[in-house]
Image (cartoon, rainbow, N blue to C red):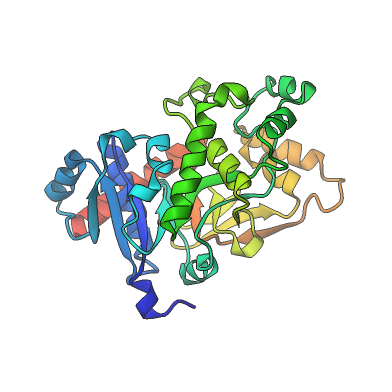
Amino acid sequence: MSTNSSKHNQGYVFASYGKEKYLRDAIVAASTIRRYDKERQIAILCPNEHKQIISDWGFESFFEKIIELKEENRSIVGLKHNLHKYMPFERNMYLDSDMIWCRNPDTLWHILEPYPYTITGQESADIFYGAPKGIGVLKDVIFRRRQRTLRRFNLSYLYRVQTGIMYAADYETTKEVERLAGEYLSKQSETHFVSRKLEKGRTLESCEWSLGMAMSKMNLYVHPWFNGLESPQLDYIHGMIKHDEDFNSVSVKYYCNPFIHSLRGIENTRLRNFIIAAFGLLPRSQDHMWVTPYVLHFGWGHQKPYWNAFSERHFSKIKKTN
């Protein structure tokens, strides 16, 4: 496990820009880390406007490092394709702000230690990754557009990365991943990937498929997103989770069959349960475990109201005691 001395070289990094709400979310997410880790430092990247709000709210000492986020990096791609510019610690764990920490992170840090750069993910991306999310994906399947993209860029596989958790410890490796990702993004028209901004409710471009291609090209390790009892992050899905009001005790229903677990994203609860039950005769289709992940991630758009309710309630509590 990590020693006390090594913990001083490790740190969590959040980013906040845009609406004041996002700063509130980062503070709430950071506060849940402190339930389990009171030693490693926490940094936040933000514009000067948010730095002033932190001061106005009386949270100056909440983050050990408050670093100015340059204007050109205040977007998903702008930041996650440029993490090499923001490495405040020797070993950095970059986190989304719609997250709740559920357990002691020491083992996760220990597992990540050998790697210069990694992202949680899967070794093979599904057909919807970076592609149309509806029936439009059939065009990709029929015309084998995914395979053509891989062949065109001399790739034999494509990682599926989930950038809610990213890890960087080596500047040169991090910079090269991001250089390649930027190059792939600039050639989007030569791929089968579509703009995330075409999706309902999305206003920012995705960084993920380009980072997935870059990591595949460089043969870098992706840390398993779904890893049973040692899963680094699992999605909050209403109806598939047990927790108390403040999320101090969390258990997520985790289907051992990858296909069945992939059905968790179906928005309608009754429809989701019906489809899962319909596959009940398949071998191991109902095998499941209750997992406490390191991080509970509210990444699905239709699950955001549950995060917002927690964030508002929890922020009021910590603001009173700060």
